[in-house]
Length: 424
Image (tube, rainbow, N blue to C red):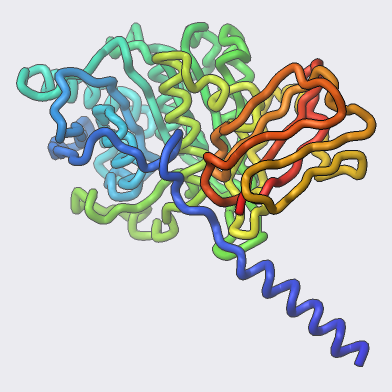
């Protein structure tokens, strides 16, 4: 009987784990599917190592828009590999240039990748300018995004943009940057990168292709750039549910077969694992969307930088358990402590509830503190500062049914309590 009970409990625990599912793409917000543009016009100018693909949002037509140069990884010059992310960027209101920079994996030297890309970028800009009826790029609003070797190239562009004769970027995002077994394309140092450039440098914790070597090099050498707009971000695996969240080199790519240019090399034929999941929505897509907003308007800085909850939040499994959050360097000492889940000296009722939640603490742990509530997409839906007394009520009746996370932060910025609210 004892053996049967243990087997039953183990099987039940296993079933609970594998019945949990990842969250879908958020409906709104950074990384979400609320798009101001509904169609994309594609121009195939892929005519060799200095060729490129060009994507312009249409419907409605815009006179000018920001420009994103999206650089692929080694051997991944077919844009289908990154198709979902490219579509996301364009429909959010950006012109995207996708330089090829390689003819194939064997005959194009790594030392020529940067030069080929620079020529492709210039050709793309000239092509658009030659068609004044097209949406024109705002060359003072340029961003460089790159995965793998493309991340290395983006760092090169941001460091030497003046000598290359290409636009200075407002910001760059490096996704698993590195050269693996093909060195030669990197600069000897990135210490000259301009202090005004915003930088997000992301690597996967279990990346066994390029590891973290180059990401750390860029982060450590760009000493002119203050931490207020430079972060190193680490993404981790989480096997709580199915499919599991993995942390490998191929997490930033996300295949869309409709974006193919019909040209596949050896690497592309092996790259069948680039599906779109929560890592795209809550890590790469979310962080770039916030980075762009931060650099252009100052509106997304709390999500792009600072080791904040919105920056690190990776969504919730279907049972309300948070997916393992991102880690950020430098860590915010004030908020980097272990979170407490509904400690004994805090009562929240009714929970689950219809939207009115009461917080009671005999120890007055939140005197002069702040209460923040976030929805399952990491969007702040409630905030109240300078709390007093031992009890407080909040009204979420205007919010959708679902799971919410609350944080109580003291007047020094330290998170002292966190927990879940279930809105019925």
